[in-house]
Structure formats: structure tokens, C-alpha cells
Amino acid sequence: MDDEGREPLRAVEIMSNGSLDVKRVAVVGTGVIGASWAAYFLAHGLDVNATDPSPGAEDRLRDAVAQHWPTLVRFGLAEGASVDRLRFHDSLEDAVSVADFVQDNGPERMDFKIELFRRMDAAAPPETILASSSSGLAISGVQAGCAHPQRVVLGHPFNPPHLIPLVEVIGGEKTSAEAIDRTMAFYAAIGKRPIHVKREVKGHIANRLQAALWREAFHLVDEGVASVADIDTAIAHGPGLRWAVMGPFMNLHLSGGAGGIEHVLAHLGGPIEDWWKDLGAPSMTAALKQKVTEGVAEELGARRTADLEAARDTLLLDLIRAKADTGKLD
Ligand SMILES: NC(=O)c1ccc[n+]([C@@H]2O[C@H](COP(=O)([O-])OP(=O)(O)OC[C@H]3O[C@@H](n4cnc5c(N)ncnc54)[C@H](O)[C@@H]3O)[C@@H](O)[C@H]2O)c1
Image (cartoon, rainbow, N blue to C red):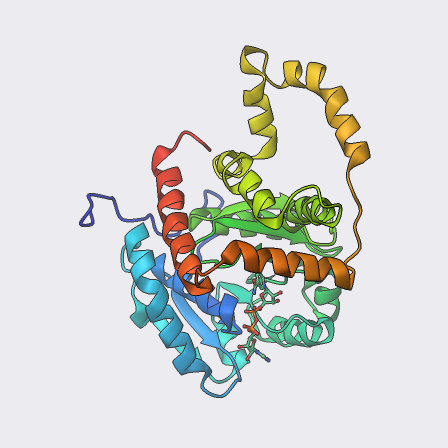
């Protein structure tokens, strides 16, 4: 039990088929995303082998982990979790050669990732999963130079990975179904909310959904239908509150009262289709960018961006914890 009476987090479980026994994770690339992943893995009682060739990377990583740690303590640490389990390796090969799971967070360039995965594939034990955090690269391309491409997957987190539970898991043309299952099971066992994206599509799932909303928001600004501030209010003080609790389909189901989704689709299906036909398809013209930039400055007013960021993170933390505690929203 911690100070607030919470049970410690469960450590990574060994699955019934015995295939998942992850004790040591290699974190390759320790910039913004890698450092956040490293802190998260450590908080779940794992050993972390980190590597990054950039000068001063080890000091920056240790500083970032120390900065994230109090938040992770608030969420609850797994038994045995410690920052002392972090080891920094100068050699990529040394970092991955004894890892049970590898999370790549290197630069987002296809040529770079192909070579990085070729080297990791040559050095890591053949049963070790090699996952990439890549936001936009096709994993079929990333696995191209590997001798064991079946264990290469995409495990796309949301920034910051030590806070946001979603991970999008995607296999490439040569990824095995077993590797997908083991990756999903690993992330789930350390408290993540993995989803399996069954086909490689640009932007995966969550960024496509965000892009759909931004598209209409930009269109409404372009057309002068509402100000930037009012559009933000429409989401942040309207449906956005519900979307943080449950997704668009479940919200729709609840809108149908006793009749649920079937009732909603019967009486709102037509109007929704009409709205779809009327949605905009704006272009990022210089004039539109200017309009949105000015609108954001007006909305921000005298507030400092850093203060807003801190307030967002505090609320986000409370929300994620409250959601986990409710336990009825899964
Ligand atoms: N920033 C985000 O919001 C975000 C969100 C989800 C996923 N991602 C993905 O995560 C990955 C990393 O993004 P980031 O924002 O942390 O970038 P970043 O620039 O902060 O970090 C990249 C790190 O890779 C290191 N690096 C360079 N060569 C390397 C090598 N040979 N071996 C190991 N490390 C090496 C760099 O020194 C740097 O520290 C990208 O693939 C990106 O698409 C980013």
C-alpha cells in the first residue's frame, strides 16, 4: 500500500503460454519520447537498457526520468521499481543484446530506421520483439532490412508515454500474428491501453481522428462561422468532456437512451449523413494560418503558455487517475 492506500502496481505478468516474460527493456533513442518511455518502464519494475549516441544523452535522460518520477510515484510504482534499474550503454548492440523487448524512439526517417532495425535485429535475441514508436512511417518499410522481420512491430505511443495509456500496435507485411499478440499482451501487462490497427494507414487511428476534427475546425474559422476561441470552447466545455470519458461510438450509444445505438442511428443517422456532406475541406493557405495564429493569440490573452501547460498536465493526471479508479469505463 502507498501513502494513499493504493495497492502497488502489478509487475509484468508471465502469460499462460509462457511467451511473455519481459524483465529487461531496451530503450533506443532517449529524446522526448524515449525518456518518457524509459521512466514508465522503470516505474513498472523493469530493468531498462538505454542508448543514444548524442553527446550528453545520458545526463539528459537521467534528468528527464527524475523529472517524470514524482508523477509516476503518484500513479503507484510496481514492486521493485527503481531508477537504479536504468543502465546507459554507449553501444546499441550492447543495449539490445540482452533485452526481452526493444522500444525504438530514434529519429523519424525511413533510411535511418531501416538501418537501425537491421542492426538491432542482428544483435537482439531472435525472440525479442523490436517495436518502433514511429508516428508516421510504415512498419513494412522499417522491417525491410531485417533477417527476422516477423518480430518487428509498430508500438506508437501518445505524448507523453509515461502518462497517456494509448499505444497503437501495427504489424507490417512480414510481422507475425504471434508478435502482435505478444506486443499487445506486454503493453497491457504494464498498464497501457493497446489497440490493434489491422491495416497500415497514414497517421494510424488516433491522429486520423484528430485530423478529421482539425479539418472542420479550420474550415469553420476559414468561413468565419466562429472565432478560434469559441471553437475551442465548443469542444473543451462541450463534447470534449464526454470524449475524455468514453469514445465517440459509446457516447452515441448513450445518446439513444433506452433505445441505445439502434435508436440513435434510426433517427439521427440521416441528419448525420447530411452534416457529413456539408463538412469542409480547407487548404492550409497562408491566410488561414494567419487567421488561426491571430485567433490563438487572442484566446491566450495575457496568460502564459507555460502556465496553461502546467494546468493541463495537473488536470490530465487527475483525470487519468480518476478514470482508472472508476473501473466502470473499460
Ligand atoms: N514527439 C512526439 O510527440 C511523438 C509522439 C509519438 C511518437 N513519436 C515518435 O518517437 C520517435 C522519437 O521522437 P522524439 O520526438 O522523441 O524525437 P527526439 O528528436 O526528441 O529524439 C530522438 C533521439 O534519437 C537519438 N538518436 C539519433 N541517432 C540514434 C541512434 N543511432 N541510436 C539511438 N538513438 C539515436 C537522438 O540523439 C535523439 O535523442 C519518432 O519516431 C517519432 O515519430 C514522437
